Length: 141
Image (tube, rainbow, N blue to C red; front, side):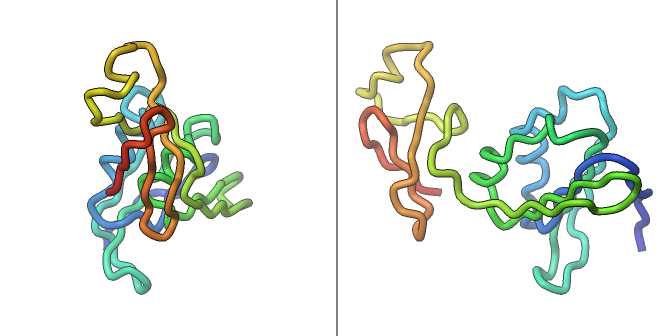
């Protein structure tokens, strides 16, 4: 059994789909932070079989819940203070996401105007489909 030390203050991202932890690590910009980050891959899980876990030292200011919800809205966000879980946040698919995915439509204004933000809105929650705010281009995962 692998033992990763406890976390006095910070965040534990739990129930990450196995293999998605590095995508989350880079999308949240954790590689650019000067704090301890532990990534546990393929941990045993009764509910999921296998899962990934990320432990982040420090506060919530490192975590963009919008990005997290888009990547995997089944993740549990545990807030740790004084070695105790003080809060659990559940995620949902965000209604709108900005600069997380990019429009692939070559005729979209975002292809021409370089500084324009890439904004997508949730058009079908069941199918997890997003559409570009400018040209309605569909983006499915």
